[in-house]
Image (cartoon, rainbow, N blue to C red):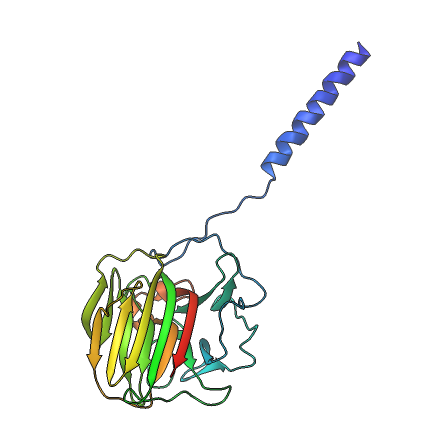
Length: 269
């Protein structure tokens, strides 16, 4: 009888232990963002940006710092730099994630925040070239992964001159397009799906700025314009702010634009 009771107590103890272990197991709750327009990714930050992305010829502008004077990260500090959640490596994808929330700090003369690369020639000298002389190209393989809740617009790659943007790649969700002077001049995807990878190549030569999309052999758009003091930009330039979002509850770090860059290459000849 004692052996039977001991056996029953042992069986009960094992059952309770198993049940307790199941109930106390690790559970990952889904992250809920105030912005409904984003894509979930099972990617986690690493300790530094992957070496597959050469950022030698860039500086980084962040959506942090003081108003009109955001923090900038130059080379060589940019190598190995991270600031979670605004600029982090995604090692599974060998990529870098750029994020800028609507409540972020802006540069002087701009109403919108950015986490964006600006082309440099070395750690201290800003790139400045002409559309008339030489051949200049930028290739970006990327995905736009989030847009703000209300004003669902982001810029993901541009050419700038000494005064303003010359040509940009912009998502006015869900329309992905080439934009010049505030106008959609060429639709690239009328119904872009967040997280969808695509590539863009700018080629500038003899005052012709050509845009290639998804490895097209012919340009999808050509701009004829002479400009100088030019440079490339890449990353995310969120086209909204707290005023545009209109509701105070949306003026948070959880309402943002986001771009993941998998490959970026610049060349000048």
